[in-house]
Length: 149
Image (cartoon, rainbow, N blue to C red; front, top):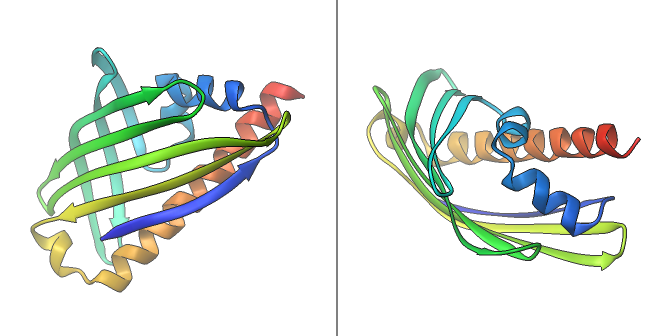
């Protein structure tokens, strides 16, 4: 499954980068993440509870930040497992600055699902992925507003 999208935030790229590289902030703004624990260089143990249609699961696994190009781009590699199936993803995030006080975040990636997750249906899963990305950017907007107020 492909994930793509973009969102513009009224804050400089340096602030957005700092927030996205901070595990506490990332755990706070990412929907369904219960815990994000640093275990190595840019590698985290992650616990998430996700509901996809009628299916709910608790996922555990690793999240890694790779290919960092400060204030410009990075790749988020996710490998999560649960009783209802597994999810592997590589998502590239690019930050650009249309102005000094705005940052556009574009994301693109692939998600591979197995188990019950894979049989739930593409429309349901892509709808949930879309909803989660909207919740993420709304929470990021709110966190930026709180820090810059």
